[in-house]
Length: 95
Image (cartoon, rainbow, N blue to C red):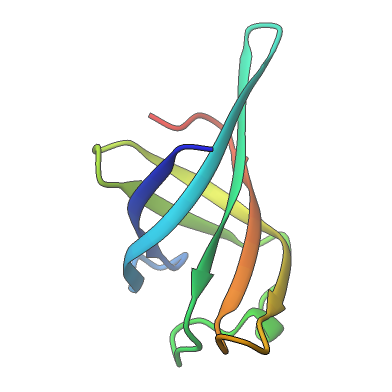
């Protein structure tokens, strides 16, 4: 999976996290490009996975300038690092 540095924004445009190390898997299904992946995030007041729904969309801006929206698929907290490992599905195009 390719690795990107990214910024994550809330639904209202506030920055939740910067310089997030994000792994993204790209696949094709016919003419549609699908993307999903995961990233680790330290617990912050701006982002509490326990208080969001899986239907909430978050904007992602990659270091190469592409932007898209993600929806959380699953998340677990690491007992080793104390960080959230968040798995997501891309929602629409990553442009």
